[in-house]
Image 1 (cartoon, rainbow, N blue to C red):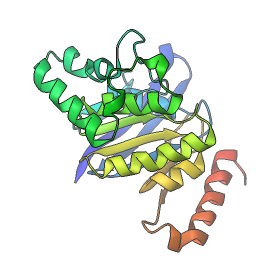
Image 2 (image 1 turned 90 degrees about the vertical axis):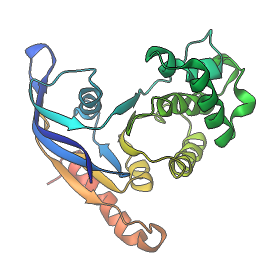
Image 3 (image 1 turned 90 degrees about the horizontal axis):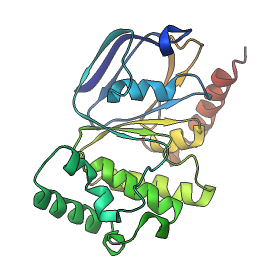
Length: 235
């Protein structure tokens, strides 16, 4: 079942040189889809269009509700972890008591309850990203749009959070679009990868990632080589 469809989307900033040109793709229910490409190829712009932060010059976007997690955590420094997670509830003017119960339940489910009264400056970078992700979850959106959420973290923290994310998603009925320039990250997390090709971006190369990665190491290594060739523009 498709939960999102983009049809012939074109976009340019302030009417300048086109960044996206007639791109189309869809997202299936509970699919983890990564979009990979070099800096400036338009991959982050795609999810900003889906989230409604930017407006397409042409084309249609139709699908279920979305929650957007930017690259920086953007936690409000004067609010506690629990208060930061509660922001979507407040912005949508939903029942605060009910929202608080759900936020606390999420924190407990993901073993973060002990941090609920901490301020952002008391947390590590990895912990801040986990809190930011929980805030996105509390939007109750069907589709989560994650814009390079682990790119600023050190390698050990990044690897830990990748595993944490996959474990967390088993608890929730969500579809994911994940933006990254890290091919290893995309191969580890994804069911499917779209690789940005030309500029302006007018098409993708698509890769289906084997579900059992340990039994398909050679296939995944070959896939990584192909993706690198596309991004580098090798002939």
